[in-house]
Image (cartoon, rainbow, N blue to C red; front, side, top):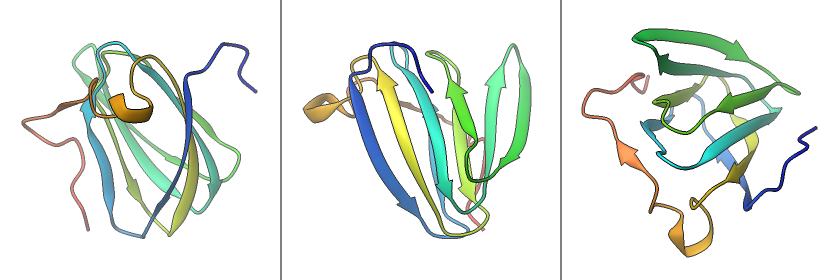
Length: 106
């Protein structure tokens, strides 16, 4: 699935309507694998906001420096793979919250 060294794998469960993210990582590349449920992702790259729906089996790439967020369209479980300082006790050390959210909770 991923052919790169990783620093962390995190299992995250999110209830329908909740939003996660609305931040960026300056030095961490993150990949999100949808295990169950559905979610809407938003990424802001080159001044363009891209939104897309994802379901089980989808792998979402969130490169370093790209603002991103997701909203659960149904209860969902994902695995988040990271390469960079966003792991262990440094989990929040490479997180910059956005002043204007890409997605809002519903």
